[in-house]
Image (cartoon, rainbow, N blue to C red; front, side, top):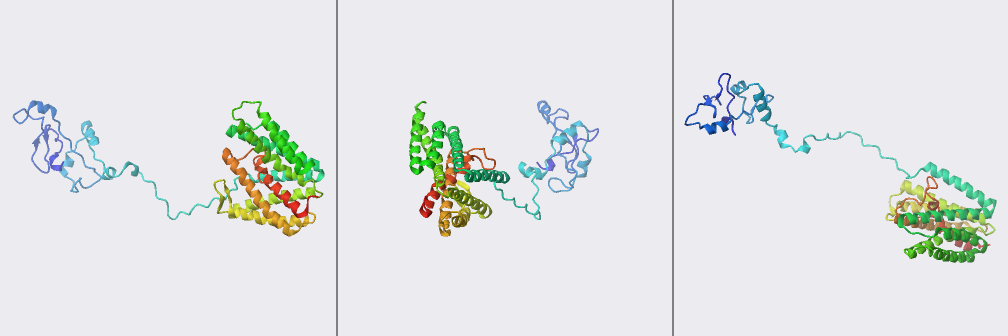
Length: 392
């Protein structure tokens, strides 16, 4: 509606009339003048004067860009009625009508000259201090038992096997509802290690067969439901933990058995350390992202280099009749088997939906989290040492 259709409010003492609109003569207000032909009573009762939309005093021009009308400004009145009309019909500023609600309070633009945040320091993902402390403590116990008495070290292997079986069967029960029989596995696993030390490979195989048979019979005392998956998991656990650990006990039977076991332990630890150090510092290309996203190809190269150097030194100075080039081959084989063993347990943990097999070792996880690379490496080292320097 144009300004010409809006008049000013009636002046004092002139109720019922509009003031001059755009300089024109005063006009009678519809509904307030005397009844007559031009004003029908019913229409008069339903008609109200339209108030003027006041202008914003902060602007020097009206909505159409013209100058303010002096008469219209003078005709404004105060009071409840006009204040109500004034608040109700005050037009919104053009900016408020044109901008959406979410854009009326835009966030401040970032300062172009603000310095970029410092890159975050790369994290190792574990409590490194606790991991080093626990590792050193375990190393002292193992080395002391290894060189004090061979039978004591065989007992250490048996204890590690039993704890590892307990961790593995507990996680299978919790995550997959697989009830692998722990009692026959623990008894048979410890017996397997002792049989391997006393009777060699033949004794280890016999103990393995008897342990699997005991697991089959033990599970028969419970409901037939889930029998097949339970005994299958039991046989797998017997092979994966105690049977592979038996090769460590068989290394110990040689005349230089403690040094062979120490070489096996050193090469596996050095391989893991090289993979960790090089991968953490230089790793960019994933080795097996679907299995273990933290492992990189650069880490594998570090494991191979570290293990080959350590293997050459160990074969030359620790193993009777060993040579450095044999140590290079031994280190290469250890790096490969340790990496595959680590990936194998990572596959198991991914299937179970867990990060660690246990919590007994701060900074490391459980016993099985330390045996993951040692177990598959034991038969590899035992076989290569037999081929290189014999079993005596």
